[in-house]
Length: 463
Image 1 (cartoon, rainbow, N blue to C red):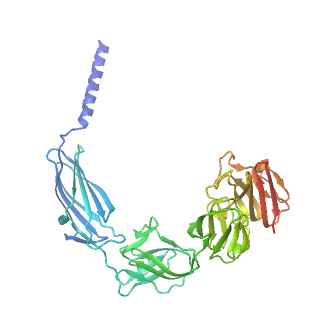
Image 2 (cartoon, rainbow, N blue to C red; image 1 turned 60 degrees about the vertical axis):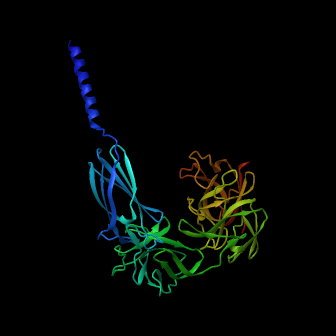
Image 3 (cartoon, rainbow, N blue to C red; image 1 turned 120 degrees about the horizontal axis):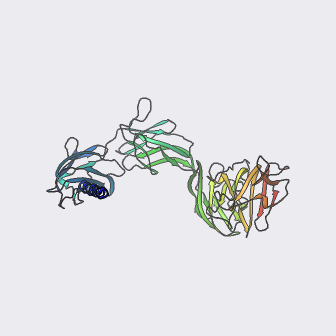
């Protein structure tokens, strides 16, 4: 009898619990929410506003039988989605008042009327959609600017730009004479007496690699042109957001009819392009002084000041011309073994004067590593300047597997001569798989040929 009583009590508790769970969710009949009124004005109640200012959105919404949930407001200006926000609504009726900022962006036209889409939803998911009528909407106009803007460089230097006579939007600096190929800056409408940016005015900076209006935590915009010799003037249009420089430039660099384009890698400036070459092709160069000192000797044989023979296997290669050193790097960036071998390590540099070592255990830029030229199946060649090197051959332009299966281990190779190169070891004297300078090695230019098929590697001086 006691057991029966216990079961009855347990069952009653369970029924009560289920009933309580059901009571947590109240169901309402489906109905149609109503957007009774909606309007957009300036904060002072006018039907026009300047871009960058805030606007006041008001609405009166209701539902005859079902409590409201949210009102979603979406702003689209000249085909740009600029704002989407959900406003909480409650009960059967709700009066809404909300402030939104109208952004200022490039090429905004005076008198632009935003598209404002409204979606009212009740707690049962029933929705009513509407578009704000033009008579209840606002017109957005461009802001006006004073006679000066300020280019604030990342290092704190400030250059004043004056408005061009007869223009409402174009500004330019006086003559600058800057010997820079890359600059980082913000453009400010206002600055303080200490030459700091005053963010109460408009400020332009970087937004996804484009100049745009930014807040105080926004990034500096970077402009790079490796062909620049001297920047003479900054120019900026406050309505189109177009920035240009008046500069003295080198002639364009053209290789095999392809003009190289600017590229920045790990802070270094290059001119680069992917170009197709054929073995023994005579390649035309223009825009490069002292071509003989710029060529990678593994891939090019100098013919004249404007011509060199391509030595590599036929295919597409990336050419990277370092605008600072004047050296030409050649690689097939995505090539992997058996079509490629890569060297990474320390103590190696470009095989042309002025000699210096640049490699490191990194893959950020072509100075960090070397791409080997494939001579035949399983046989590769690389020529470099070296000074007490410590390196390894990899099957790709990046680190391999932890088990070493994607790299060549020096322990399995016959090295000739061992006076110039030998297998590396760690501090405990145990083999580490690296190739290092031999005991008789001296700084100089060397050519290395590695045969993966028979596990042999040879090194010789080419000076």
